[in-house]
Length: 363
Ligand SMILES: O=C[C@H](O)[C@H](O)COP(=O)(O)O
Ligand SMILES: C=C(OP(=O)(O)O)C(=O)O
Image 1 (cartoon, helix red, strand yellow):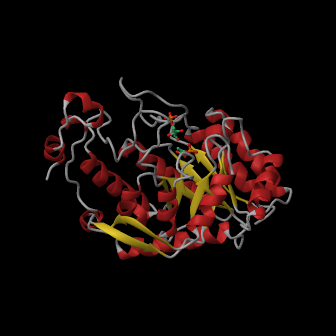
Image 2 (image 1 turned 90 degrees about the vertical axis):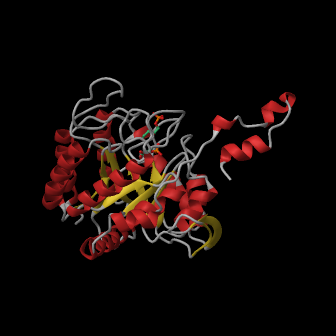
């Protein structure tokens, strides 16, 4: 029975109207299942091997077996295939130059959590005009991620809508659970069943506890409600994910990348019996969302790492071809973010080469 039909059959008298959803409040349209999209846009055996190798390399860094720095870097969100591929070409070339000291993983973020409302990412609205063609968004997002993999890059994304994980998780080297969802049981259950390294971010208010709780929950086996590959409701059993870590992204009270904050984070993790493996997000509340401050955050992390803090194993940067951000609505500038402001390519390349030079003391 359709949602509209259900609504009509339960219609209440006018006095109870606040209890009854008007027929237009919720409508549904079918979408391809994850299995259908994977069949339409398959991961070749060659790329599947590459994904596994990259996951292995990322784990080795996060576990402290490889002294290189893991760097998750790239646009705040993907919106323009041409610019994304140009960015990826440059990142792949840079990766060749710095790969002995830095492992570069490209941000391929197709879902955006919003504080209130706003464009929610390529997968939701690929035409960028509110038309919300999500079937096309799913297709375009998976196709673009495959093209990025073909350039040899490992991929990172935020897993926001748990139902979407199955459309993309075979392509990922690393994933984030964002500041707005680290406390969510549903996301912790999701991570518990993923065979890839995942970073839990501290809350937007700066709280570390929710991310530590999340790691402990995700390390456990769970039984939860979910969907199978065909999109049918399913009882999902997960085995627990041991490959999770903390991502410090600052909070309402300010940044949390300084030595005192890192020491607090280490103590919180150790207090909960979790090995301290920390990524610092140089953007978001750690830079006050000013992209030109991302370099100082990265330099502060490097200073601490070189001074002997081995728990600092990874960083994140929001970077695009050109500096800044732009609003949707008018004529869009090529290679400029339409969500958070990013550091442009020139600054990114300079910064990462500088980081690689400094890392030679360790690697
Ligand atoms: O990384 C992106 C943003 O910080 C996040 O999606 C929230 O954005 P908003 O506060 O502009 O909605
Ligand atoms: C939304 C993001 O981060 P956070 O969850 O830290 O706001 C992001 O990295 O794109």
